[in-house]
Length: 71
Image (cartoon, rainbow, N blue to C red; front, top):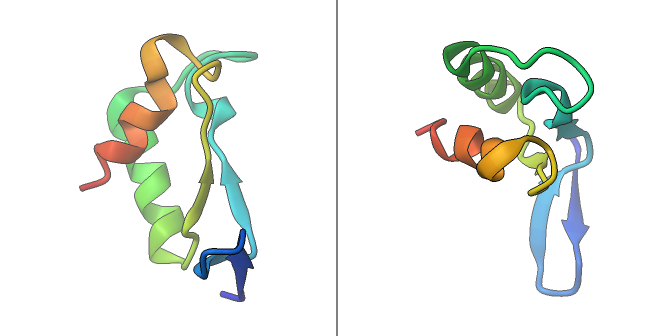
């Protein structure tokens, strides 16, 4: 997976990002927590290290919660 620098602090992330909005039911039916975690882990296992989350992507910071549960 290609990597790029993010910002000016030297942090490198995957060039391909994973948009998490579809996991938490903003515009669609949300996936079950276990499925969401499995999807995120699969993306990470393929080299994705940039996950697009937002506090508006689901209730109560649902995206951040799922990413945190990746372990």
